[in-house]
Image (tube, rainbow, N blue to C red; front, side, top):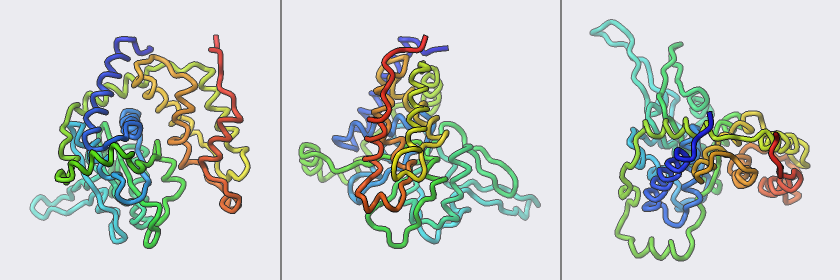
Length: 322
């Protein structure tokens, strides 16, 4: 079943309402806000990488405050243990039984701040829950519920005392983006309202968790023409043939591309995906999935360069498949 025009219009109105609400905290970053909401409604996870002071945590908190669900913040440090994230089983002497005490991961939206500061052992505690939305402790699986979103932040400049995220974990993030510096108008507005120390506190809930699940189900019903699906598959194959690329787009990455394209189309009040959706979302979906070889750095080739070449090499479809 395909989403109707009335449902697509309602989707766009609700999406814009959430975007306007988040704009109170994140000034002049409409595109980044839309990417974050697309990630939430596509039931994926978001990685935000940027220099300090650009509003990474503010964006995450604004998104969490927009949804009438529970949210938690985990400050990742080198001494953080896996049980500090997932929870632990404790023996109750009065009852004579073991009881599971859930950790902060059991919330609707979880902010994993400076995720690359935790040890690989603690980082691996997120692998199962990000893929399967459940945590297994002492052989017992505990589901975290729906919707569920992990927003992780990391600082690309300060690498001392950090642990690089492995490719297996990077691939579990639906999208990767950066906030970037604000333009002059947004900077002036920010400075004029310098007395407001916590802009995320201005964001109030405007949508329920149940509505998020409803919108996710509607996004799944957006039509994707076989020509567009073939375009994504061809991009994946070409990514593995590109010079300096050691690891190309995985099948999980192809699924991520289609999922976010459906949500992006619905947010534009469309009931179908167009090739421009794929091209517009290529960088946030591919930038953390393409692994370059050591020679690329010496040749001055970046991931963004490879993505540009990839989109130039594969022509988008111009006709629908009958």
